[in-house]
Image 1 (cartoon, rainbow, N blue to C red):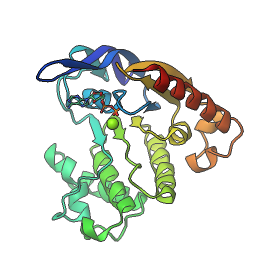
Image 2 (cartoon, rainbow, N blue to C red):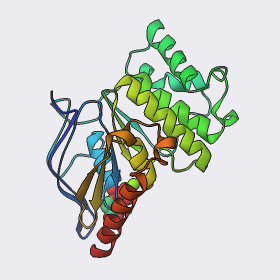
Image 3 (spheres, protein in one colour):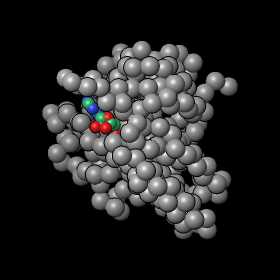
Image 4 (cartoon, rainbow, N blue to C red):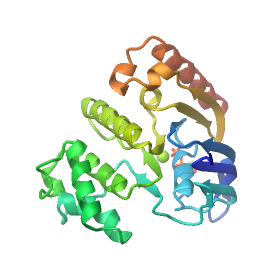
Length: 259
Ligand code: ADP
Ligand code: MG
């Protein structure tokens, strides 16, 4: 089967007034269907740059990106992108916010509307459909943003630190909810996080980047028993702490070696 994401020699330089700075260099990576991978690495190693490139929001200076076998040349409804901030429209109800992507892609109909209502209920938001974002907690708003992203049924979900602004307990609950929902739907996902334990708890592979320029330093496979356990409980499994320390050590080295 064709990988969902295929990166070939992806390089990106940001052009300033006087100089160009190389953010990522020669990245090669495949993400298979149904995989949940995490990108971790020191701040500035190019995680957000890479995600924006996969989302089609940024054209790489060099290299190729395909999603489901098609070259990416701009944003596509096949790719859902969720950010740390929820970006809900304050003047729209929760339901209308959740339906926004369907509206924009011309896919809003009775069936997609009722599926969105189901998704809201799955995310514990039943009864909140007619509320406004300001009436909801941060964790709830992030769940609405996730529903909005999933409502268009993207083949690929990109998540840039979606839990990092939340309280620890809410963050753990949301990790469970998201990983369970994605597993059930077989959604392929790429998560950017600075939280190593989150990366190990939710994903099947942890991709460690190093900076200046951003390159893949090492890829860690998460053992099957950790992978198949809900994130909250995965943290207690034997092997979790060892893997955490292994990734941690390597990340420290990566931080020390880069200029
Ligand atoms: P991360 O998300 O891993 O923290 P980024 O992708 O945001 O890293 O940034 C990678 C590198 O590119 C950093 O050195 C950063 O300063 C630089 N960079 C990011 N965005 C821009 C931009 N719009 N213009 C110029 N340089 C940028
Ligand atoms: Mg970033």
